[in-house]
Each structure stands twice: as C-alpha cells, then as structure tokens.
Length: 154
Image (cartoon, rainbow, N blue to C red; front, side, top):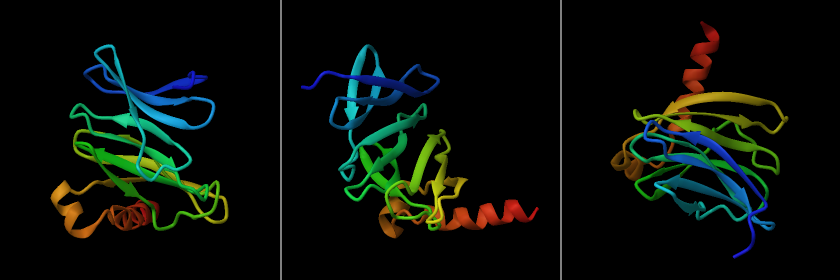
C-alpha cells in the first residue's frame, strides 16, 4: 500500500462517523472512519478517483468520482450499492460534471454541477428509494432542473 500523502475529513453524521478523501500519491480515494476503523471507498466507475463528502445517520454516503475522461459524476451509496448522479445540465468534459456534497436521512442530496460553459450552479434533489432506482435508473436530477427553475422563478 502506498503512503497517504494528504487526508481531508469532509462530512460527519450524528453518530460521529466521518467521511472524506485521501491521496496516496497516485489516486484520490474516499473513506469512512467509524469506531477507530478506516474503510476505503472507491466508486467502481471512478477511474481517476473518488471523494466521499457526506454521510447520513443510516450510513448512506454521497460524493463524486472522476471518470477516465476527466469529467466528474456524483454518486450515492445506499447499503453498499453505488448509483451515479448526473445533473442533465452538467458538461461532460474534463473539469465539468456533477458533485454530490451531502445527503440527509430523508435521502435528500445537495451538490453542484459545472456546465459546458464553465458555469457552476447548485442543486438539491430527492433520491428515490432503491427499488424505484432499480426500475427507473437515477433520473433524479431531471426533477432537479424543474425544482431549480421553479425556485428561480419565485
């Protein structure tokens, strides 16, 4: 195992479980720290790295990963199953994409995306229950656009 060169704690839940990221000199990895134990988290699609940014009291985590092309994609990890989260307005080039920054016990997520013009905007959305995700995929952020537009129109 490579030596850890940097570590950042980025989120904590009511139970004191901490999530964050570390860099081993080659790749960025997410982690969960609970009961004096570190568990490495790597999104299966995170060819260029994973960052874990949020955790709720149920142990569900959220964050983002960078794909082999340099674009970022958000994720939620519900009971050990990763789901990608991509805002439909996010760009797909290096330095663009979606980052999920937090998750609560009601499975509401918050984050940001960078579009193809380099503009960064925030979003909030509700993650469907896992059974719904399996049926429809994680099209959560299609509804986010509607919510965001509605909020801007008010």
